[in-house]
Length: 442
Ligand code: SAM
Ligand code: SF4
Image (cartoon, rainbow, N blue to C red; front, side, top):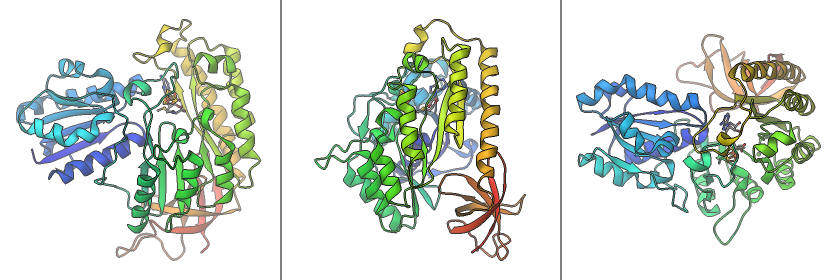
């Protein structure tokens, strides 16, 4: 085994976990290849947050079943691995490695076992009080770097598998996070994104005892870092001091992703979300009355068991009241082990589909309006790349909006020269539901 291929499904936490897995494999002498066909070791870093996400990996494995006979070794990592455990060996007997994210620190030992020919290697213990801290992260993006500051989840939302797949909450020490942020700045990264299932539940395990707002302020002071983002925040642990920190320092991006899930307190109770609609709205008010214009985004689940038409209407009214800049919306999906499985009044699939499309249509009109308000303003865009098809540079504003723009002197990347990784002032000239367009002004 000398080469490996890895495919990642799911959230940014998984994407970043893969960066750490890749770094570990490379430090062990493996080289990464672009296709499963070219690899000796094929890894899938999986997601099981919804049923569809979970099915994807089994489809993939079926496609490559025949390659087992050609001497390839297959491994399933991440949430599906943790959730299904050794059952994966029965369902896909050609898989040799099954490991959840809480075991990645043991990856070098697991690789030794695979090399020795062991075809049933597992890493499934959730019994750890440490986060995966490694010096070997292999980052793909040369400008934006992720740092996981807290892993796992100690909440128990009735619909969610994460507490079962990622284990209990473990925060990294503030010292190791700040050291990593400084190293990243030295390496030329200018944007840092702090990650955690509930990033704002961060609690420094060292005697310094920092909370999340203290961590934000400190990362915002690291020399060379121009933008700091964070995701995802849980409303229960979202304190006003976080808004104050954003107000104090423009390096902290004025964007907060604050998943609400439902606008009905009755549904929130059944979901075991630990806050009411009123508690949530108080947090929105803190952001709306901040000095900076904070962009707010959210996650919504429609069709949770027992959600009535009136509950759903409350969610629609919440969207109108908050005026979110963007949202992710999902149909409720039944997940193994979760308390919601025991709830009656499951909603029919067609009804979930109907509610989802009404919600998305309403949000689309809100986004068109919100984005149109920015036409004529000048925004700072962090340039992420160039779109050959449209002839525009692809930028992102501090509020996390996509801002595509043209530049009179830089019609596109030329002779290796590119604007990617630079910050540019752009006048917004057009707005659509999902992005802005404009012209560079400096
Ligand atoms: N920890 C974050 C929070 O509490 O807001 C959310 C993390 S979760 C990985 C991302 C999103 O997936 C959730 O906010 C929720 O909207 C959605 N989700 C989780 N479980 C789901 C389920 N069983 N069915 C549908 N959507 C689900
Ligand atoms: Fe899942 Fe709730 Fe934990 Fe978020 S807070 S990861 S939704 S259990």
